[in-house]
Image 1 (cartoon, rainbow, N blue to C red):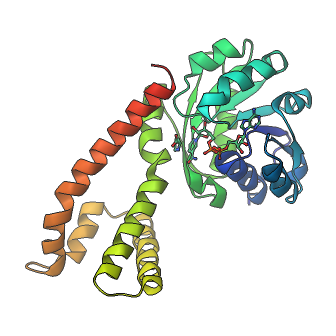
Image 2 (image 1 turned 90 degrees about the horizontal axis):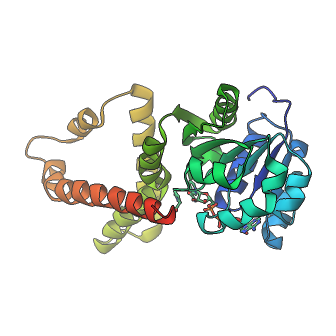
Length: 270
Ligand SMILES: NC(=O)C1=CN([C@@H]2O[C@H](COP(=O)(O)OP(=O)(O)OC[C@H]3O[C@@H](n4cnc5c(N)ncnc54)[C@H](O)[C@@H]3O)[C@@H](O)[C@H]2O)C=CC1
Ligand SMILES: O=C(O)[C@@H]1CCC=N1
């Protein structure tokens, strides 16, 4: 457990990410539920979050009026401009952390005059405190603001401070990767079913394998190529399989990351 921080955090948008961050911060022990405020326009989301003891509000202005020490912007990029317009006057002088994909620090600083802006790009496993988050501070942010953002997200997994252009790359890789991994689990499961394994046991076997491989890679610090070699017997089944999979997976992954980056820039109007 992390030692408790003596601040309040307001999260605007309690969806997949905002809700996961809120729960992760409380579960980590960094903040008591009573000092996490979440605003969401969806009544069902509010009801689910309220059950955890966190404070819920129906809109962004009501949350800003509570003057939390830090505000995390966790709505979709497409609605962020409207939301910032509703709360700009209240957020002057406050530390604001945006998780919105693509929306630049400069855009947020222009929309929130006087706010101290930090941009972060986390991923979904923050909810189980195994997330990966890139952090970049705007010109308006102090070193303390960046440190605070790092402390909050360190409670939810690993954190790396980087330049803003690198953060966009990190978002295109690490932000999207939970979907890539899920797709791979599904692809392996379907391939097993196609060749005769029952779906339920195929999925269990594949998921258990993914967890075991992730644990070994992380715990042993082994390079992925070295780990592959351990599995690949000369003239064996894995070598035959990799001959097929590797070119398609490498090309597909580069193309996928480039597509994510292009969409990041599109969403940001760049
Ligand atoms: N889903 C992911 O894996 C990641 C998402 N992000 C970023 O996080 C942000 C949120 O994405 P998700 O959580 O996936 O979306 P989501 O749709 O699950 O959550 C957004 C929430 O905002 C609420 N909302 C919409 N308008 C609102 C308003 N005016 N006031 C208050 N609440 C409002 C919605 O009801 C919803 O619950 C996006 O900007 C996205 O780019 C960043 C990293 C990873
Ligand atoms: O798909 C998206 O736009 C968000 C940002 C990073 C991961 N999911």
